Image (spheres, rainbow, N blue to C red):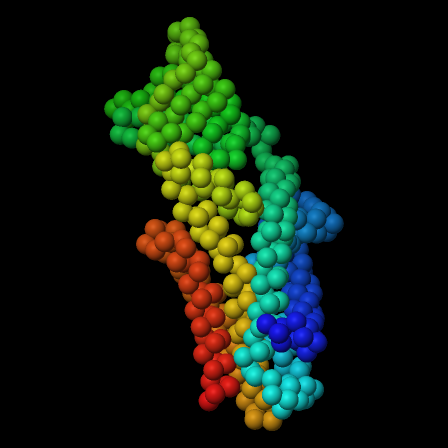
Length: 366
């Protein structure tokens, strides 16, 4: 701790931070270029948009993309900083002055933790807000190319061997289970055809476990008079979890909004596994960045005069990629509820940190 806030420690922190900033600028330029081309390819082929409109869509996605790529930015930036110290012989001088290899982990990990805290408390909420705006603006832009007779809103279908129910709603609220301006159209199976039997329009419909709860509704049947009711429950076989996953993108929920959303979903009897995984991943994010910084430092401590510095650097990048794919695989297992979300989110950062510690022990003690 004394080394961390000493003059030498602050110098190493500034070099690591500078390396991360340079790597971030390089990655940011690549992100803007690639996503700009992607917007022109996906949106521009369906509706005519200008370069400025495509750039606006790209900028709305940029904070979220930075959050996703920041672990690799920290890894690359830390390696650039330590390799720079190595090539300028500053690392040799520090080691000759008695600075242990273990002490190089503290400044790098400090930068990772600090960036991680800023990312989850500020960058993530900003990214969630702008990504919500991106999705809304993209839908509005694409709607210009839709057929004139197409209707807005969402469509849902449920059914069994006895018939089907087609549901249209003007909008879905943030929970993903409450519909506004919902219309239920009932069809019964008769021989080889479906026959329309009744229509219900409700001001609001909320999906409960096993049924829809309708409020302020009007029911009409062919040839009959409309009947008004205050409440009505309609059985359903729809999986509420699938409905939430369909209408609520975890990327649109910020670090501050996720706990409340998860709590409400649990109280309603749903299983918000994807959102629990997102929450745990955000909690583990500072450790993940500290791990990437530690790996970058550990794989760059090999003195240049000893050779194989490029090989060590390539190995560090390979370990970083391995941890990324491992976290994706663990997340897939968590979504299928094969492993707890906390285990899937924390296992990759912890494994990477143990690898960094083991490597530093090898470099320092042989």
